[in-house]
Length: 145
Image 1 (cartoon, one colour):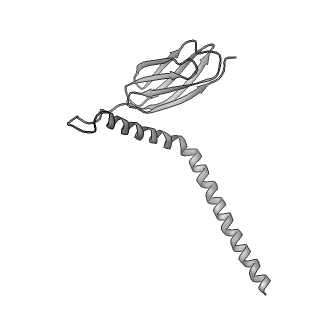
Image 2 (cartoon, helix red, strand yellow):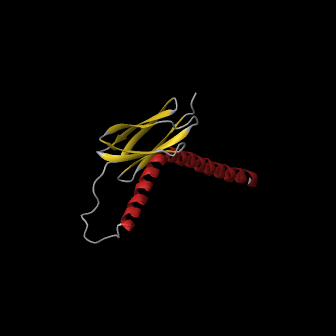
Image 3 (cartoon, rainbow, N blue to C red):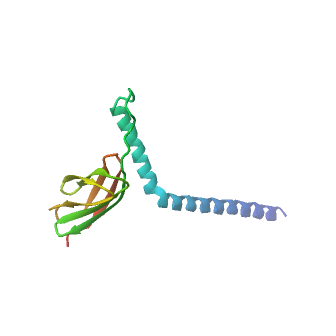
């Protein structure tokens, strides 16, 4: 009889362990799907805090000016050049920085624009596009064939 009771206790423990594993898998899947969005929100909050401390944090200003945000970045290689397709939520100045060549190009963007980065080099690289409002997005491009 004692052996039967021990077997039932073991079964309950295994059931709880399976439930915990299932919950962990669900949490990991959700974080994998929502991770980039959470990262962008965190970046905007940090940039907002940096902006508030840089302006002195008060003193009669009219508050923050509304600006557009980068909503999409697509870096496309064509030989040694890279064209970056950018989409923004409103008219804003965007700056693209190439990791390989170190080039920085700024332009005004009204909902969508293209930025050309000539002669970035033959290796794969990353382009980071930042809006004047502070949020940024990154895309990679492959090595030259």
